[in-house]
Length: 186
Figure 1 (cartoon, rainbow, N blue to C red):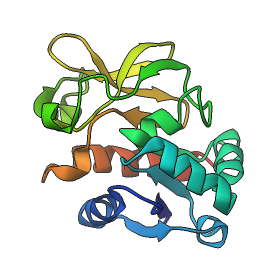
Figure 2: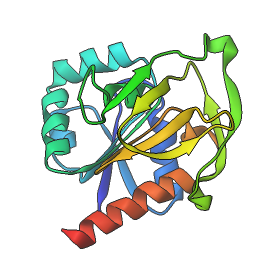
Figure 3: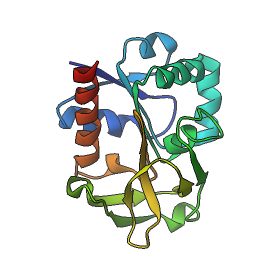
């Protein structure tokens, strides 16, 4: 079975690891290059994108992830992880993304995430969440006002919300299904 590495430098990595396990996958914390080299796919969690980026550079994980993306490894970024996969950092998804687009921590909210893929319709937590203003990537989900909250570009996808903070495992199951398809296609 494939091993999912969850970047564990800062942010909500524990919840992602627990959700992957509950969804039937295997996940581990990734703090070093040695940890990353053992993994088949990656999740970049929410947190502070500038802090995570600096720590990734210190550990050499930025170059490693850049190469993993180039090799079509499956990578998912949530909230700050979505920012890290955008044009300012790892350049994995063509999108214009605005950090903290909905306001401060006090402006955090839960909303229904809508998708033409019915299995991806769920509630999402938006905590100091970014907003995807435009993209050439495949739109996976929006809010009722048509704000883009999830996109997929090749083997990389991003969500601007935190699915790991709900009991609903649909996004983690979607990630694992994409990982299984990637392994079968390889």
